[in-house]
Image 1 (spheres, rainbow, N blue to C red):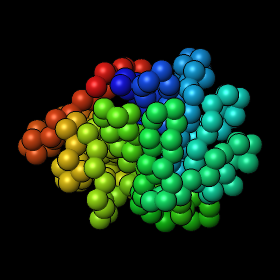
Image 2: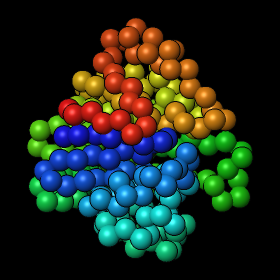
Image 3: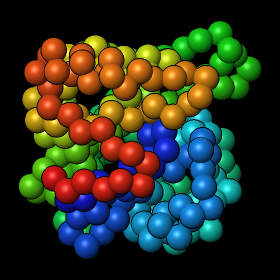
Image 4: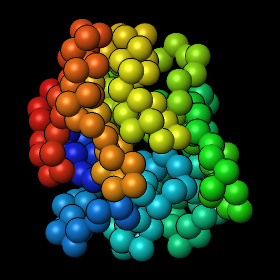
Length: 215
């Protein structure tokens, strides 16, 4: 499986001849991403915030889109296959995707329409590796297991690197790929992130935007 990182929480997974694009958002978007994103066979969106869903771009793609009813209501221009956490498991050409829960943090600035009531994560299983896309989530009790976790570390309505370390260990993950680090108003101290992971004995890989790793 190959994983390519894009700004904020966007990643492209490539396995079994299929490409799965997760959370292609507006933050730090570049026109050059359009051709790359358009190659996706499937698009997974975790929640309605714009840094996770660039509706005006992806509406022109041929990919099947999966997300929540709340995202569909926010972006009626998209044709979305509705999913529910802890209920749906998608079978996509030999790739199994479990839709799991996520708990988006809240701040008073969200009042008036930016509150997230439906937030989901995805565990993508190609039969060899399980990749857990956490979405913007705080820690919460669960029994999810995965080999690789793509998780947020900014601490802004989501986990910090300290919390993600604990979260990853509980999930039995062998590798963490941190995301949600591109917002200028919420800068992330990369050296602190590295130090914390190392203190917890968590193996990690920090990818630059556009960089690909094979797992």
